[in-house]
Image (tube, rainbow over all chains, first blue to last red):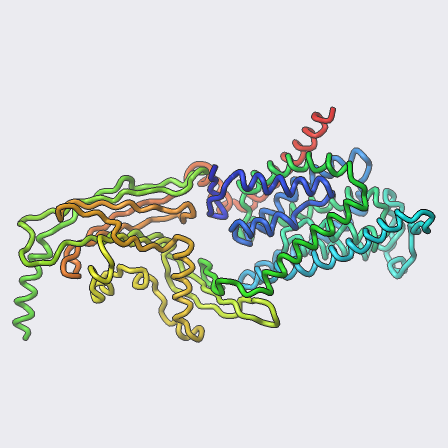
Length: 306
Length: 253
């Protein structure tokens, strides 16, 4: 069944979009990430204009994050104080990101900029996660290995403006969460992602938050950052395609349900290794596009350069 | 010399008026609805004559063009910078149609003279306006060729040679397929009658292409009420997310 997208102005197969949403939903249900880093490149691939893919991807992440947070809320897995601080930074970062996005669109370099961000951040995070999870998998095999300490004191703990975060059991400065929030908000606006794949490791390794509250808190603030991004894109460039988002969300909801059930059967280390391989694969795929000579050097865009 | 020209002109004028096009189309509006996946338009017509066809004149040929709304276009070229492929040159074309199809009774070079092509702007090269692009980049002509190539590959620019059926030098018909990736606007249909590579009669029609129903509603709202549109997108996403969470629980219970 063909579906004409009113904002992207292309006709796509509705079942293809439903399937894409489903696959991404499956993975996000399995790994507990928003899945924006997959959906946006996939939309590029089927011919959705990059600007529409990024803005609509953000809208889709809102839906999957809300679904995830509601599940985490029942497990008391959300630190609202920490979420609020991350959010404050996130909004600033997101506004800056939308501005840079517009500026890059005008220069004609937005595709490159988005692609470079993907290669850089996905590559970095994927490699770090792979190394870490491989190490913990090996450690789990060896019995009697030393257990990692929950809190390691570092320079992070010497900063001013300290605040108590009860749900996380932390007493740290608000500066690192503000900065992390801003960085993730910026990426969310440019890459059309929620930034969970950056936020989760940053919370565990940089802030030392307990894993129990990490996913819920990350999803909680992602809802607001991606919601803000969606509205900003809708207002500044009218690139949110409601119809595309709805079909993606529908597929995602069904996929997430299956993904969650599969995820429960796998071990945490196995899950993390699989996720890191997936992240690395996406990063390598995009890197190849940048490095190999394209078959068509020219591209055509309606409109004039500002 | 001038007298000779006047005589020729007086001979040519009645010949022009002698044959006229009477044209019709299967539809003069196309609605883009949610399930739109292209549309086929039948353009047909007849040649109306006051007198029998002029003797000694060449065979009658017909050209039909369909032209979508034109916009300025930016053509960019990638080049290798520091090992990666980057857009590093661009040219702005003043006006290029979003869709252009030319259907003919025979190969264009056999039925149309260059002067009449220039005068009436029949082939796509004559329709695209690109004044002063030579100042913008080296080898600007390559950008124009690339524009034609890219849009031809996308199915936006088409030459349908021999796709106009002409019977008894009187009745003609052609089918033009409008692709699924259609832009809104007025599509100009032009019909040309030719003899001896010269245009002897022309006719124009318009097809209105509009988004309808849900498509119209979403598009208008996105452009006229962007803030409300953004907020509604969020509410829909929130409802879907919440609905999913409730459904999960019900299924598990």
